[in-house]
Image (cartoon, rainbow, N blue to C red; front, side):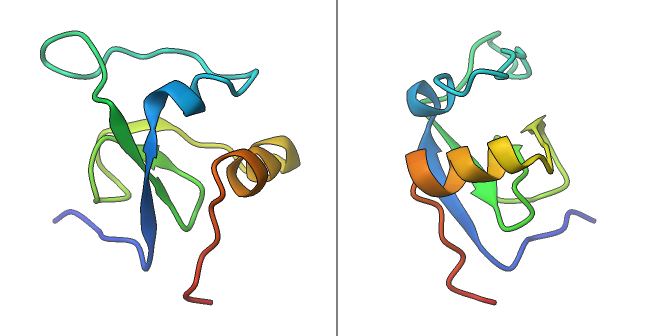
Length: 79
């Protein structure tokens, strides 16, 4: 069964692509990525609202967390 995180935020894929360590992965059936993806409270980036399915990117580095909070304006209201 898929797991939902406590909080996630939809973010534009074009903004995510500005992250220096971003590596494009074609995981959609049509070979592309949607305009928006989901950033979860565990800093995983997914295609949908479930934090353990269709994972595009995940990292626990300070650089990724900084990018998420400063560039993507991610702030978990549930802490």
